[in-house]
Image (cartoon, rainbow, N blue to C red; front, side, top):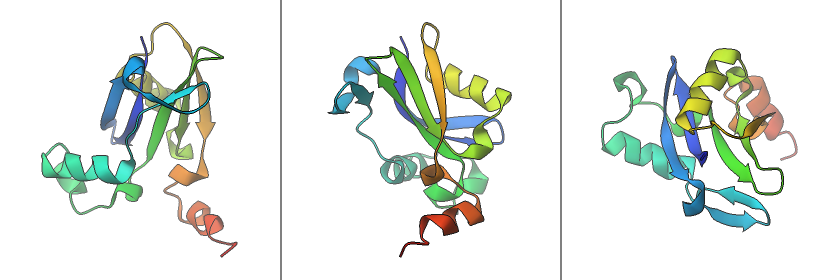
Length: 127
């Protein structure tokens, strides 16, 4: 069964935290998500030495990332991610990380996960 969680993808290497759907939380009706955030998981990966050495001086938001949640209604995994990761190779890596075998995936570009300076600037135009 597919998993939910958060991830980063750097030079064809994926890291993050994926958990079984039955261990997730239903914070929004019908959507199963991991109760993790990128800030805390990045720190855990840094402390435990699971980040590539060249990333130890980076902040969590500097590396292309995303989140996978499960829609019970659609019986599909929904992956929100940086637009830089919407390509065949990244999708294959992500589906493998989240053990996606028997359900469809909806891929959603999300500016919240963007690492592109122009996209980040647009997020703060209203402030």
